[in-house]
Image (cartoon, rainbow, N blue to C red; front, side, top):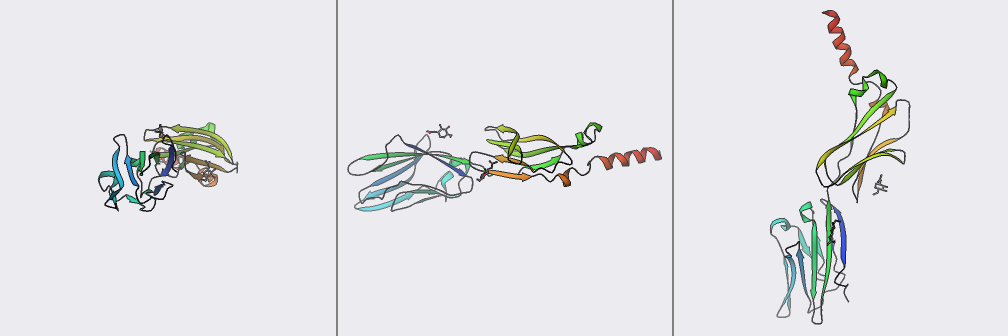
Length: 223
Ligand SMILES: *[C@@H]1O[C@H](CO)[C@@H](O)[C@H](O)[C@H]1NC(C)=O
Ligand SMILES: *[C@@H]1O[C@H](CO)[C@@H](O)[C@H](O)[C@H]1NC(C)=O
């Protein structure tokens, strides 16, 4: 009736979403259902049978406060508004008269992705060698387990990845002013992505450092 006990189902979800861990069974009158979480196999939800009556327990402690909901027909467990602290292994045990069966869910929670920010790299902008070129930076702050990439149309130009650490990332790109190809900077993790398109005419039109330089020259001339 139930899946084999070595099965581990991978579940990937974005922070803030709700996820349901489905038992794929219909709870029979005599079945007991037990959900545990993490290496300590903490009991988080249970359907207990006492005197022919099924009682439902869901943990309201610690990280699971106000998060859990169990379907009394199927024993499926829903985690609402999921956070990274809910990452881990969820074990399901179904105890019926005839047999005990197990199933495991490996839940990975990924952070929401910030939209990448494209800025002009103004230190390079004012150098004479880059008159017809525009140097750009695509940046994101406080990210982990993501890849940041520049695309020209659908072609990947460059990318940089970060693993578990929460850090800031920047990826440079040089473009010609007159190029009207569609450039975009994309951040992605294994389940989702965010794209920012480059507006060349807006960002590369003038050097941001230029007007400041002119003002300084004028001041020096007056002295
Ligand atoms: C759960 O998933 C993580 C990340 O994908 C992996 O490193 C880990 O080995 C998995 N655990 C099990 C028990 O499958
Ligand atoms: C971003 O996600 C969408 C849909 O989820 C997918 O179609 C697209 O290929 C992804 N883009 C990149 C660059 O990964």
